[in-house]
Length: 328
Image 1 (cartoon, rainbow, N blue to C red):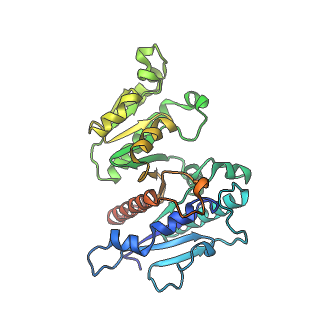
Image 2: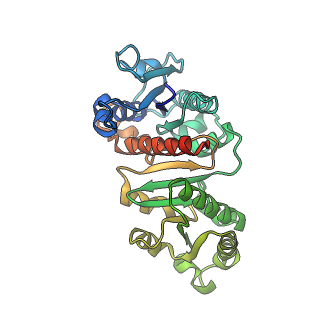
């Protein structure tokens, strides 16, 4: 039904915890408790499971409205804990189907379960992760990776790079784009004139050039350009204090220069409910902020809290987009 928010849930790597957390997060009990809107207990969300149909028993023909499966054909059963090319190919096929569904208007958003970068490499798949993959599938050139949880919001200026490559990859344009995307994201979340704290790259934000020149050469000019464009960007702020300041209310979001600079604090603060949101896409895509957890796959031990938070975020973004008449 068109009045329902239609969420596609991809299976992720079938040898990890993806199918388990998808089923747990979308279970009737969880959703009736968390998302009934007072209209006689009717749910306003329609779930579509995307992956091998045999992984989602009871989803079709269960007598429950608003639950279906888009099957990704495979004869291989899961091998819990194994890193295989086949599992990654299945995961990518599910992602492609979900993206197609969003672009075609069949879904309002997709929430993607974790995939394995090593498996992608084994399969010869050219992307380093979901973010770059879905951007390519949607033809999007300008996008960003925002992580959120328990009031902390973090955008990354560079994403999945070896640490030794970060300084060379960091440019004024990359920092400016991350700040601009953060401003757009805050607007979509209803935060007007949001305060954007920008990390330094080096210890003590370069210490006046004694510990590196990237702040003066790249980051400060990007902040000045963002401010000239009307954004409330502040910094560069040393990374060892900026997240504490954000949690104290000084910033509405933080732009980090590299992956672990931003994700380390975010996961320390909100590991059980962190959400990854790809900003800038023509579709809405979120995911839990954790990996495949191969070590506990197939043991019914996985916590679905982060997946639930990712679904809630996707629903909120889809509702806002529907009310605004926009695509994201």
